[in-house]
Length: 494
Image 1 (tube, one colour):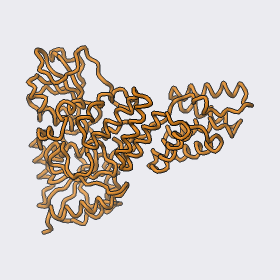
Image 2 (cartoon, rainbow, N blue to C red):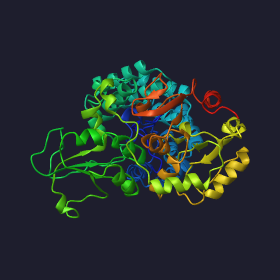
Image 3 (tube, rainbow, N blue to C red):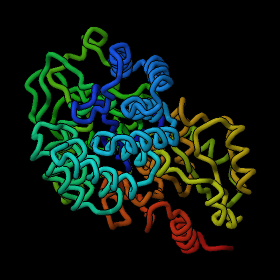
């Protein structure tokens, strides 16, 4: 699974999980009893077909029916555990797969999939032990080496993680997941030249959410176009589109006529920010024949052209998005009471990595002791639910019900621009605030996304951004202490 998740509706992991869906199981992993009837074998085959096709309800029903007749059927216990995992019942999955292992401990895929479930629960040490056992039983499982690499990287062992990805590539050179994992590990370590090299293989991985668009025109390689325009189209989510929009000035320096295709919610903001660019949403050749496209490129491929080393980031400007000035002034007047305004966002709904990136609002309680600061919610979500969270946490937090951070991003950008400071987790708010030039403090988990690098408190992508990192996995209190201390020197008490 890719470590690429700046979206909230919307960047990797950081812990990623890839279910071993090689169904049916390898022959040596099968534990079907010699006394199993032909009817049961046929039922197992049909159940597997349902499972492979994603008909999990039907597969579960058949696995349970088989287990009713044969409670010690290790394969059905294991496969039922996989269904439980795929439907979010991780505790049940662990219980079932451990029962299968007790019956058939030599099945490498059982250990591997137990590792996947434990990894999804955040039990990295236990997951790593499962992967190690799977590799002891079957050393040449490239996919398991990739998962082991994810575990080690999430534990802060970047070099060891890289070694696992490279071992996977020795076994299976064409495994796109291994090449992209290696790419993202290199980017996390700051090796841009080598890191971008295999990044283009992201389209070949199973978990990448954006499809590679196919047009009759070629992919752009950075050259001047003799005729026609250049289409840059957004990929992944809002946060990614915003971050890569920072390279639009670089693209414009090529001298080409530029068309930018973005999420419809970003179109007003991008059109205002890049007046020399034709900004559209949902580009299709038959819808925009007048644009005369000569080449195209996904926005995530731009860094491979323009940010190939650390020195290239000198071209990054501190402000490249422009909020509606009238709306921004309206927000300033609306809440002006003489105190500095600090916007706050603390959650993401991202299913892959939201658990490690989000922070309980109650943990931020020490910040709210600064009553000389006006705390403003920039958190998306149901307003009633947000107010309940604030009340439970004892947070004096201004929640503006006129702002819908998800559906009206242009208005949200104006609200952000009215802030003196934004304090946020790693989500789309961080990207918007920093791109708008607002001082932005980002609270990062121990295992950060590739774009935030390691061991530094600044970001080459955003000059106005400051990073606050967990010193240990899950240690948000230390991060809050860092923020509290920095607030003391940024906004002196009256």
